[in-house]
Every structure is written in structure tokens, then in C-alpha cells.
Image 1 (cartoon, rainbow, N blue to C red):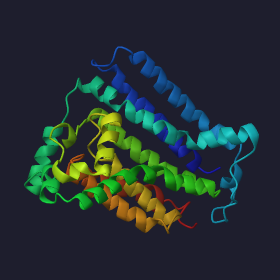
Image 2 (tube, rainbow, N blue to C red; image 1 turned 180 degrees about the horizontal axis):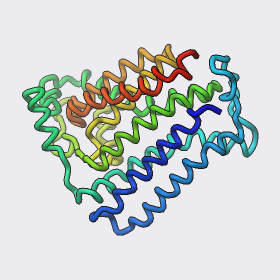
Image 3 (cartoon, one colour; image 1 turned 180 degrees about the vertical axis):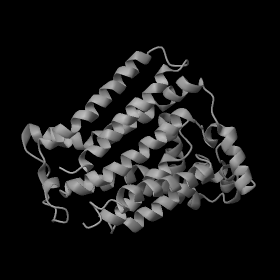
Length: 305
């Protein structure tokens, strides 16, 4: 078993501890002990996942560079435990996102730092792109294309690891998982201790003809029902999409150009729709590049696949 099998577990355990410290700040919710127990349970899960994964090593123990076997790990109960151990990071990440506004409110009591980002936007661009982009190009087709790109983010998270896993390339799956988990959770820590709401919470949404688009309406429905306040800067959407695109050039080269186009579209679409500041997307992309190359391009265990 390589170290890549436990790196994501360590990252999750560290995040559970560091983000859980927010629950000891003055503005914590009344049910904070339940959240502390949940964080402790995640630490325990992360520290034991490697053992469950090792119970059914399967195709990931073949030599690096060997052809994928096409088999999922192990048999019976061991197989189920190993699959759950492999996938639990991608299962718990949405749950960790849901609690972000509870944690940043615990620290700051509902204060957000949008004024800082608005100042940076004005200094860099001389205007507010999240307000002016759609107003300058209020075209329904453009809006729908950019919103389609924005929504592709959800596929970008889960489809590449699923493809690798189903074809039996568990080693590549685990290699991809490491920067993906790191990208999410490093940004989540920023959201806890430096919360920024984003322009969607401060300014009216772009209107006119583009508001009639079904993808525009679907995007707004998803964000209004499932987004956490304070999770805007830097954009985890952009960081994760960038990380997955870098990984795709390594592990799924045929899909990489499509993912690159979609990632650029995410950056443009989030600003066009007024969901993020332009600075959010730029620094999210920079963070994704740094994390992706640090974990993949410079990891000698995976450079000779």
C-alpha cells in the first residue's frame, strides 16, 4: 500500500480538528456539543479508513504502470468496507460544506468580509465585474452556455473519480483523491475563518431576458436551496475544477480538453451570473493550480504511469 492511500484520510482528520476549533468561539450554536462529537467521529473514521481499505487491497496494489485489472477491490464484506473507505471523503465533503455557515458564524457572529474583496475588485478592475458582466452582454444564449458550464462543476467533481474506479484503476483514483480533498478542505478552512458572502447576497441578480433561461433558473434554485453563507472567497468551485482538469491531463487525457473548457466556463459563468467576485475565481484558479501540481505533477510515484 502506498502513502497515497492515507493522505486524504490525514487531510480530513486535520480539517476536522482545525475547523472544529471554531465551535469553541463565543458565537457557537446551542447544539455545539453535537457538532464537536461529529467532528470527533470524522477524525476516528479518517484514522481507521486505511485499515478498512487494506482489508481488500485489490487492483491498487499492482505495480505502478501496470494495466488496470477492471476489478473492484476485494470480495463480500471486505469489498464493501474497502469501497466505502475509498469513497467516504467524497461522501462527507458535501456535509462539511453544509455546516460552514454554522462554523463561520461561531467565530465571527455573522460578520463577513465582502467589503475587503469589493475593494480589491475595484482596485484591480476599476469596476465590479459581477455587476457589469451580464449587464454588458445580456444575451440569453450566452447566459445559458455560461450557466451550463457553471453547473458542470458537479460532474467535474464526481465523474472522473467514478470513471477511474469503475475501470479498476484504484491507484489513479486514490492519487486523484488527494489533491481533490485538499482543494476542498483548504478552501473550507478559509471560509470558516475569513467568511465572504459573495455578490449574490449583496446585489440583485441579473435580470431581463436571461432570467427566463431554464439553466439560469436551475442554477438559482440550487444555490438558494443548498448554498452556505460565507463560502465565496476564494472560489472552491474554480479551485476544484482546476485541480480536476490537471488530474484529467494525467489520468483521463481524452476528457481533459472538455474539462479545461468547462473550467474556464465555470470561472466566467460564476462572475457573469453574479455568484462570485472575479477575484474569487482568479485566486481559486491559482490555488487549484498550486494544489494540483504540488500533488500530481511533482509526485514521483505517479509521474511514470
